[in-house]
Image (cartoon, rainbow, N blue to C red; front, side, top):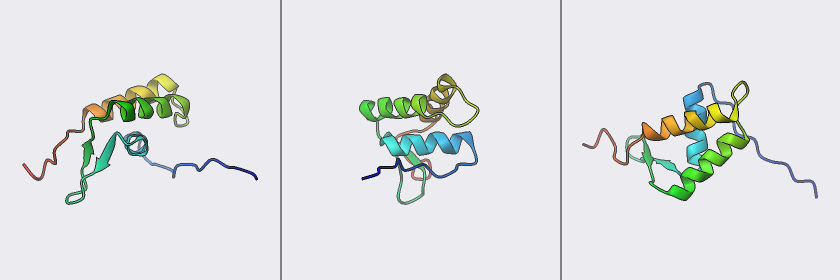
Amino acid sequence: MLMTKERRPAIITLRGWALGVLQEAGAVHEFEEHGWAKDRADPHAREGAVDIASQEPPDGLSPDQAVAEVQDVLESIGDTCPECT
């Protein structure tokens, strides 16, 4: 049986790509009520996101640049919804 790897949908911004990687790894999830991304504080999921970023960087970025972007986006996300406070 031929197995193919499912590709992620095209993302217009680098931040959008990084958010997609973080969601795929389970490091963040979308807050249902307002749609903000929330940090799950799961170190294994964070490591998974870094692995994905280093192994599958978007076109034009080095693995190190992709990892740096994922880490920057993760640092900008809190564990509470800004609209609920």
